[in-house]
Length: 124
Image 1 (cartoon, rainbow, N blue to C red):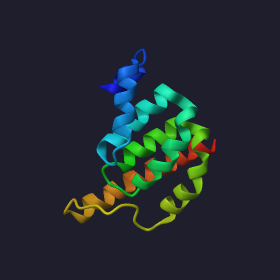
Image 2: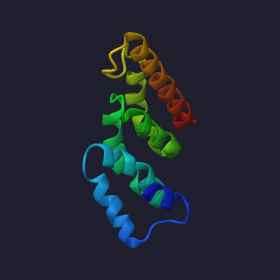
Image 3: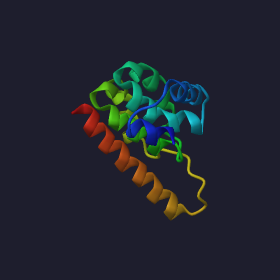
Image 4: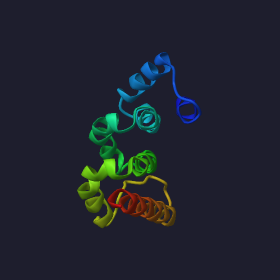
């Protein structure tokens, strides 16, 4: 909801505090709130996002969302290019527990494609 509000007119002071609180707790709330923080604060929050989002790259659930935020940050995310390059060049990007080897390979390929696309946008 906070992301939608940030996209459609902005956040109130109270909503911004809620967003900051969500970003302060590792896990789902942190990744979900990162995009809204970027929309609301812009480059002022870049260092905070760059300190957190790269840790989610290898997570099969949170990695795609983290990559979307890094992509939205564009050139402001350049400090993560080295980490993205290592991620892209690794044989297996995330530890999937889907239970089907073919599905896990497809998920890994999807994550790889998202990482390559993010890298292209970030590098300019």
